[in-house]
Image 1 (tube, rainbow, N blue to C red):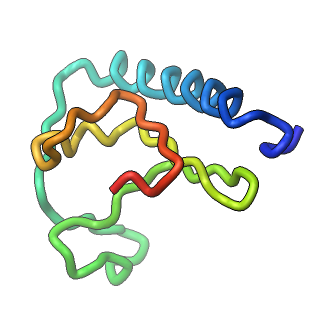
Image 2 (image 1 turned 90 degrees about the vertical axis):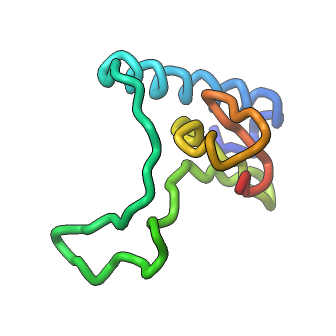
Length: 98
């Protein structure tokens, strides 16, 4: 099936279940509470690919739906100390969340 064959609600449910599996897997493997920190990411295969910002862009899943996208992010909570609103463990949004 194509993404457009689902209703928006059905696609959100699929993304939530997928995100929950990934998040739960990460939390069970890395049981210590991780904390965010600022720094640069060095890619050993190409050190020139880094940005000149304090940290490189954050990654998330971008799912096409009709003429838009749905965003799935299971690691956004690492930035909780920088964002005033409470972030969910599994973030699903119809617009770029940050």
